[in-house]
Length: 192
Image (cartoon, rainbow, N blue to C red; front, side, top):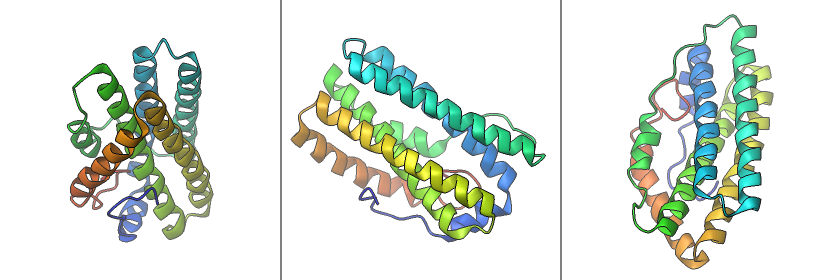
């Protein structure tokens, strides 16, 4: 899926299901951060009204996901915890090129695409491996949404940069992410 170099071990779903309140809180905050990231990209691209419109829709959808997860937390009687630091995302951010404006924007799109790709892959693992039927359905729906976001961000990168260079850079992102993700998959967090 998405050419990710290292798939998530399905046993991660058992860790997640073992503390579903924690995974839901972490997931909610991931959705909030995704919305914030989309808004940040909007501030970088005011001269591209079509992209701004799509990013605004993504931000709204991510906030809707945040709300959906928050509602599940409340319905199940869990406590909604504080925002967590996402070490995986912070490590990915170190790979963003700080070169020209175009390089930076393209890399920020690829950064967003990578997070969406891994999140989608994790949601697929949850869908296929947890026993909770309600959450299976929920994560399957989100998996489709995340796949659409991934495709949108990759498309924006190719639109804003040279498609051939973008494809080469995406391969570099995939290699870099594979080096990072091998240290994760043992905590009850979406990327952990």
